Image (tube, rainbow, N blue to C red):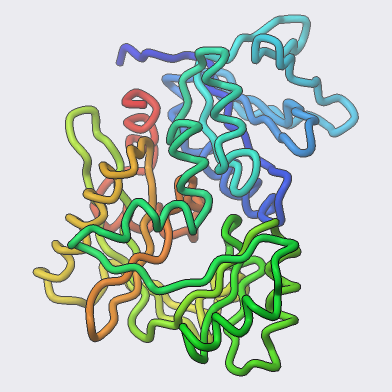
Length: 339
């Protein structure tokens, strides 16, 4: 197969609370990229230090570099010197959950160097990373609903925020950072007395937060990607958790079940797939993106967009790919070649 790219840099690690999950996702993706087509370089990037952690030359075994011997990435031209040989990366597969991989900073750097990458553009990434901004693009559409919310920036009047949230949204409600993922900083608040601690926790993850109306219902998720010709939606998953909501513990420590495909009528599944493709197009997404929903008695509610969804062996997107009868390695080749 003739490919557009040769030296693939898989970038993982991040400056956020999600950095360990990011490493697991990145290592999984690197292991599944077709070793007969590409040279794969794994970059561990955290707080400005970008190091080559491992690499796998075409048709060869993976080489893991000891921490003390990891060369730094040259950020002036996005290259690395390894074993006396300079390698320029011609494609970046971004697996950085949180900042700087999901909020547009890494994308902006790569755009300035004209290096193609796997995710949404810097502009789209910045919009979708902020839950309040993202909902602004979808509030007036007729195919999905958005839960009512109250916005607060650090330094605003907290008492006024708590009063407005209680009056407009009622209890229970969710208090969450507007950015970030993996449910860090999210609290389901059941009474006014719990608001100050929920606000403190949300602000520990960022400078802006949301109080969001609690929508009871079933949690569903669907991923979309571009296959070179059209946008394609993968099978819908239903998430059933033993916890109050799909928090970090439920996501990563086994306290949830993911039903794939979801046990819902095909008509509803098709509606969710179509809604996901419309959201993908309306926001201007690229790469593989996962859209999360709550299916309530009064309709389908948009929760959030994940522009760099988890990609460990236990993550939702790989499960959708398997349920669609696709091979993960071929799927990743499609993402790389069609980006």
